[in-house]
Structures are given as C-alpha cells and as structure tokens.
Image 1 (spheres, helix red, strand yellow):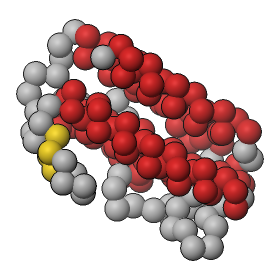
Image 2: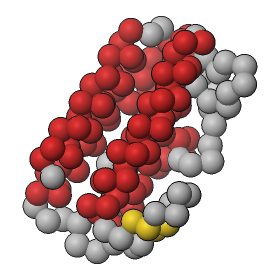
Image 3: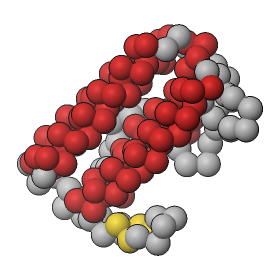
Length: 151
C-alpha cells in the first residue's frame, strides 16, 4: 500500500502546483460548455476521497460538513471561492492523504458499507476505496487539464 499512497501524494503535488500557478480568477472561471471550475474539481477530489474511505467505513471524515455539501457528487459551484478557501483546500490535499495512510497503517478501517460506483465496480472495503480513488482523481485531473487550457 505504500506505493498507493505515494501515487496519490504525487498526484496531489501536481494539483497543488496548479493552485499556486493560477490566479483566483482562473481557479474560479467556468468556461463555456463546462458546469464547474478548477477549484471545484480540486475540492471534489478531496471530499470524495473522504466519503469513499471514511464515510463508507462508518468513521468521521477529516473535512467539515460545509465542504462536503459544497463539493460532493451532484454539486457545482454557486459562488466564487475565496483565497482563504483555496488555502484550506491546498492544505487538505495533503493532510487528508497523510491521515488516511496513518489510519490505514493502524488498522482503523475495520468495517465498510459496500458501494457500487457509476462504472459498476463494487467497492467492498477501504483498500478498494483507496484504489478506486485513483481512477476518480485521474478523471478529475483530466477535466482540470482541459479547464486550464480555457482559463
């Protein structure tokens, strides 16, 4: 599993660099033909990882309820994100993965509610959730790459 977490950390470093190199306006821009923006995709990546791994394990998530409401599946941006929220999301990119790795190492994820994702894959445990999260983050990283070309 060590490599699994290293891959996620590497991906999150890329997302963090994009946050650093884009203006607040660019992060918040929703190009024509899209229903979200770069910063929403980053927030969504963070929230979904927590929902897949912690929530389905019956454990408290390491993100606040207002972020879950704002970035969970089925949402879209309703107002521009502030510099303070960008800073929080940038921090959560790393703290959530580090915490998940630590919790996984201590065997915290004992129970799990199976969940079938839109592709039909059934997530049966926290290890599956962590593995599926790669796919989910890669999808949204691709969307972010498309958005970057338009902002």
